[in-house]
Length: 332
Image (cartoon, rainbow, N blue to C red; front, side):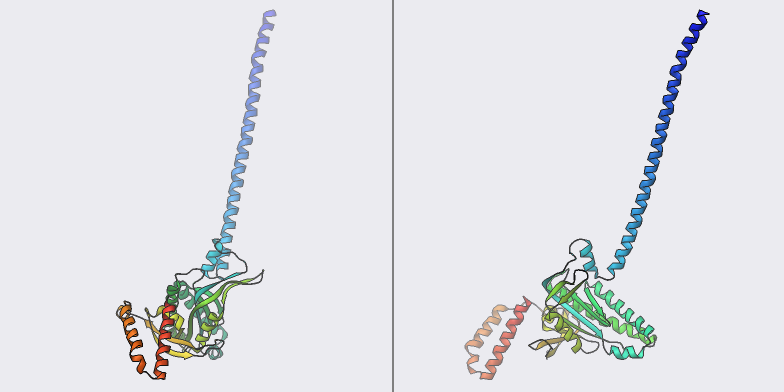
């Protein structure tokens, strides 16, 4: 009996550790399962968060694309890249300003049904805007059939290049308008649709104007008014530019003098030019000027010939020389 009791005691000792290990294994497996569930839940939550972020990003991108339609691309880009603050601010800058509208638009509107008028106007604005953006223009606003555009802000390639880009844009717009005549005639618009365009280069105030709740990125100043007046004086289908613009583009664009005009709100007459077409290479002037030769001729004129001039001739010569000097300063 004693031997039997000893064997039972040893067996119990062997079973006890085995049960403890099993219990420990069960506990470890339970912890591992909890960790697995927690990991899977974390992954699922992370994927859900990523999905939510991706969805929000898509919505923001779609919204920003919608908002971009209300701003010129350059302005939109500068705001979203943080290069421009959205607050009331402005600066003085030399810009080339462009105005255009459709000649006799009231008569055209009276002849068309509202649906046809809307279709024609939207096509016109779309075509003109595509050309403007192609040349790097900042589209200021549409006012009915009128378009206000400027070059030189928020990005500028220099005063001369900005002026050239503006005039080249206007030429392409007029060419496209000629092509659209056939399209609109097919649509039942018998009267030719022609644009008047005015361009002026001058210092303007550009920036954000308005209230703390609503801002408009635009331009103001006498330079803007001059461009607007030139547009109203232009013949249908033509481009009328000021001398200030002409002085920047004269070596690349063929123009015809249109004389001086009195512009409302401007105290002095404005010299105007009508744009003809871009120059071909052989038409471009030779810019190598013999300054020494011109100086000698002028000195000889002042020393000799001037003494034999009448007061009227002398006055005319002085006026011509002053005009030439002013043009040289403008070219600088």
